[in-house]
Amino acid sequence: MTARRATIARQTNETDISVTLDLDGNAVFNADTGVGFFDHMLHQISRHGLVDLDVSARGDLHIDDHHTVEDVGICIGQALREALGDKRGITRYGHAYVPLDEALARVVIDLSGRPGLFFDATFTRDKIGTFDVELVREFFQGLASAAAITLHMDALKGDNAHHVAETLFKAFGRALRVAVSADSRTGDATPSTKGSL
Image (cartoon, rainbow, N blue to C red; front, top):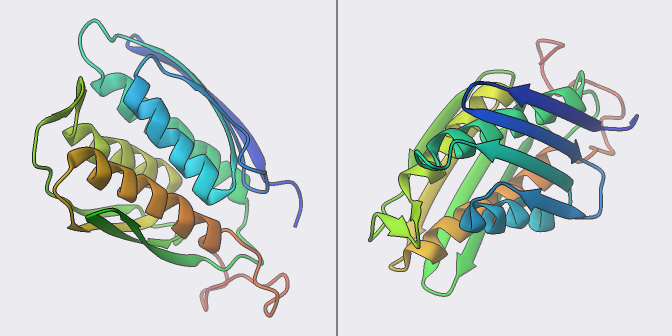
């Protein structure tokens, strides 16, 4: 496989974002979004997905965190789509179950070229610190749509909202790691009977 790395810059009236993603990295991570809990969650994707991830974001945080979190998801999704190229030789599917104490999440990914998020998570409170828990879904919605991937995310158990959110991000990283990995048995073939993804 050739280098699977992409840099995306996106500027709107609400946000100014730069993302660099390397799918064959070593979990080198840097993020400055102005949203501390969100940076912590992005670190989980990098660490458990074994991807290098650099995120710089300036957003209208004086309003709330929504635009920043959603737009970072869009940019990471665009970077993922670009870094994957024609998807030849990849495994395509990935899944992971990740526990964190009482919480347990399952994430299943299909790098299908068809965008869809199917998200089932209940949080026991509305905020983790100052972070609105509804933004977890918004982030992954932006990512799945921009990357054109099918993403199933289920929080199977959990009482602590921080733990529930963290298991979802960790499981996403783990599932992504599998899905983007090279399939040694198929060589350079496209993992689809259609011949393209």
